[in-house]
Every structure is written in structure tokens, then in C-alpha cells.
Length: 183
Image (cartoon, rainbow, N blue to C red):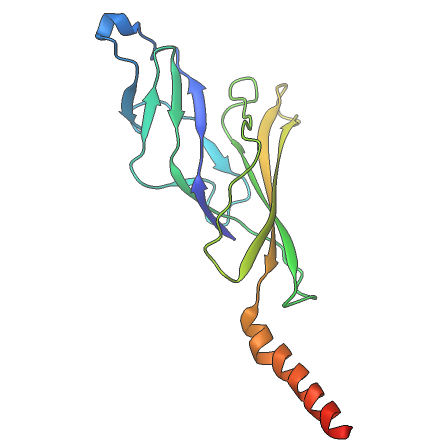
């Protein structure tokens, strides 16, 4: 499954603090994403490598208190196990897990701050039924500190109007035709 969206990342960088009055009231800096440190958030269950595929040249916004905001567009391609026994009336829940390979939860704490996820479906074959998210903190045998991830579960239902037009409607028509002629 491939999902296009925006990743909203916020962090604090103590090296990027300033007093706005010392700089003519400057309240925001626009910085290219490659000019400053940014968190290494990756898609653990990626179908095409581990990196979140950010595209475009999206600037980071730096504020006087050191807070950085970066909202790059991104493409997430990940595997989704599908049970097709109810095709074409099938429903699937696919998981997308984001986290850091490099930083523990003490160094990089991922949080979700949005109460809901806005979804717009471009592919007409699927309807998004639900999107849930869950933050987890996991301890591994290698390390004493936890590693944090955020898992999004996307539930989709097949929308197949062509199947109805080609198979279901003609079948119902034939049943009605034979039933009508029999009486």
C-alpha cells in the first residue's frame, strides 16, 4: 500500500535560540531542511527501504525559543497482508509503523498530538473506513532505554462499482427475467 501525506514534526534545538529584539523583531526563520539537524524518523515496515520518502524542498520554521516545525510531504510504501476470500467485498487493516533506528525514546520521544487523521482517498477502488494510531515504548535486549514508535492502522474497504455493473446487476437481471417469464 502506498500513502501520500504530510509528516508534522516538531522538536527543540537549543543551538537555534535567539532574542527577537536583538534581531529587529525577527520571530521566525525559514531554513532549508538540509541545513539543520532533523530527526531520523523511518518507516519500519517499508516496502522500499527504511526511509520515509520526503519529497519537495520544504523549509523548516525555527522560532526564538528553539522550537522547530517541519511539515514535509512524504510517501509511505508498506506491505499489507490481504485476505481476499470475501473479494470483491473485502476489508483490510494495514499497519504503518514509524520510529527511529538511531535514537532511543529518551533522546527522541515521538508523540501524536492530533486528535484525528484527515484522509482523502485518490484511488476510487478503496474507501478508507478508519485510521487509528498508537504510541508504543519497547525495551529490547540490547539496550537499557526504551525505543518509541507510532503505529497507524488504516482500514480500507474495496469499492467495486465495475464488479456490480459487470457481474451482480446482470445476474439479478437474469434471475428477474427468468422468474418473470416463468409466471
